[in-house]
Image 1 (cartoon, rainbow, N blue to C red):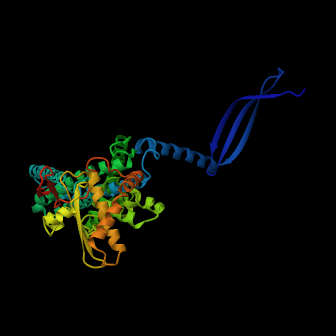
Image 2 (cartoon, rainbow, N blue to C red):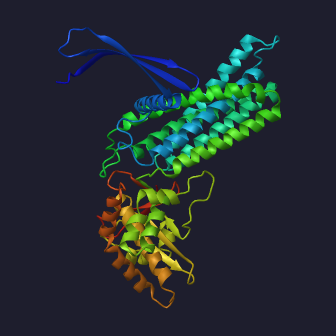
Image 3 (cartoon, rainbow, N blue to C red):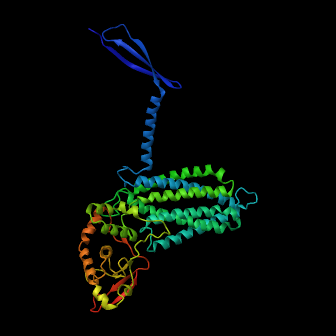
Length: 479
């Protein structure tokens, strides 16, 4: 009977060479049923060093990736966030990094301007100037926050635009600080204005990010408030920002010896970094789908809805993701595109012929009054004004009829069609409003929350109608 061999107590030794590794194994071997003791067998294997290196590299990368996800990304990523989160977070990280680098360079310019490193510098004067410019900047930031929160163009209505305002404001502050060494006698004035811009940037950035994070967090389709992981997403965004700040500080310190040698190099380098900052900030916002309506988003959606008659194309073209790609959010740019529509007009504009015309246009079932004027085949104006107690559903319903009128006018080149016929046809379209509303809810839009539709400007007016009297009392009220 052939005896079996038992091997145990395996001992491995590895010797590393330049291009190879020698693996030595010591094995204690004995034969079952014999008492002749044990013998030691040594084996050697020569392995290419690269094979082990690749394996260890994969392990290191795998562990690093796991730690990165745990410390920098929301729990459950990527299924716990919107599909556009990766793009948003990546570009935001790059923007924060280069922005911090420019701030390091501008801070060094401030220190030079205030006299740090100079024997003739007065420490008390420099300290007071620094404290005063910080105080003025913080006070200016408070005033700006109160002004924006009370305006109709608040951060909640257009967070993308305000996020761009934040990036531009920070770059303005940086370049003003870079100029302080050139005008040391005006240090306090320049530095104070720059610090106001910095505080404006910090305020608008934090406020707009809160709204953007709501759109990227896991949400219910019924409410914008039902964000399951908003806190976790915000916490990880803070971690990403801290890491970007560390890297940006190192980058700024590394650039300092080369860029601070002369003013031209300094400004050239900061212009390049600022350009990267603006580009990354813009790219981070392009794909973020905002689920509430401002004037521009609602106009784009209604236009797409009426222009696409096929149901399949219509469903794709009314999604928040599709509308976000068409949205313009650069500050100081003309992004209206719907000059034919006038919302919140005064009563004499909607009903230029007086109370009798209002009586014809007024509908007890609706909380708005609208009218249109046609000049030629391609030029017309549509006017709409809401009653004081109109809610989001009434606003959406009124604008739906406005775009129905536009659709009819664009499709009918026969100017002989009577005003009454065109208006009657628009009410036929209005009978499909409930289907439209359900379509956009299914697409992911929020329209049931209070103040989820913001289309009126600070110049818009609303009508106060006393329905308790036989004779209606009308009054324009500024919205």
